Image 1 (cartoon, one colour):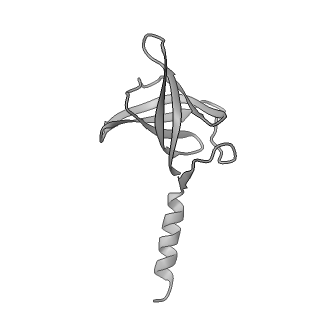
Image 2 (tube, rainbow, N blue to C red; image 1 turned 135 degrees about the vertical axis):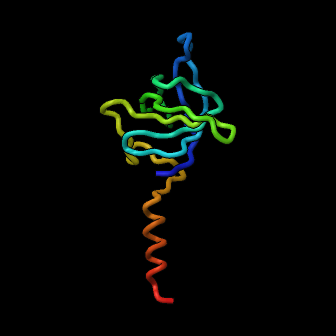
Image 3 (cartoon, rainbow, N blue to C red; image 1 turned 90 degrees about the horizontal axis):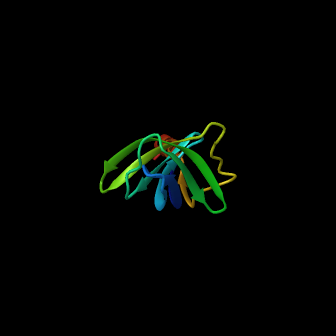
Length: 110
């Protein structure tokens, strides 16, 4: 699901110091998420995405610099899954719904 939401990302840097930054949640699925951030985070680092009164824990699987931000791919920890029942970003878009709507419009008589 594509989304737009500000969340807190927490991790420990190389020295073991706790880091907390505001991140932009770009997309989310049952097993992972992508956030953009102004700082790089080492692949393999354990992170927590904090939102409202909840959190999702996982590990960084990729960190790519693009368009002035670092995009971090996060795989949720085993047993951790996202559910819109627990956390629903304010702006949430299912790309499959766009395809369905486009196809429906094309099939309608003009």
